Image (tube, rainbow, N blue to C red; front, side, top):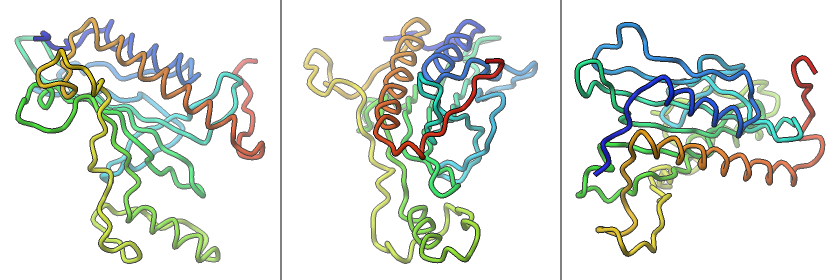
Length: 239
């Protein structure tokens, strides 16, 4: 069994470097452990040009994903990680998520989230794969966008409220609750096969680097198929 992912400066630096490299944001920084962390603390982007609402309504600092050609993608990301006290002075990673947002009519709308949870990965009775993807465009969020486009004279987008129920799409299930496995479903050497993956301090950064690179490659593919007016260039700072 993996020993867990222990907090360290080198771990955060590795995650930070993966985000910088994959998403072409060389000045990006992640927060570090606070001086008095208590039983639990959170790591996220230290700063960003925008604040976005996640699918549960919480706010998250986000940064735009830039392609290798330094083009804007209109796709943004946020990162969050929770560490809990495991021993005196030692904290282990309990949860990590990378959420991707898309700018729709000026509103940053969550598209999907890559997620890993240590407790669930250790729980053999849980049916959720670990790590996994969530695709999180809720019926309520979609309805808000539809209503905005239906009434262009309204001027601004209505603020998203997670407790608000959809009227246009009443009865539709929230597909964001579906857990899409990230592991190899055909692996037969694992018992049970396909579902769970525990990480340690060595292999978690490797997985995270592959994850960010894969997302970046797919975003670049999407950008290459966007209309030219949808991907304005941005000048590199100091360039």
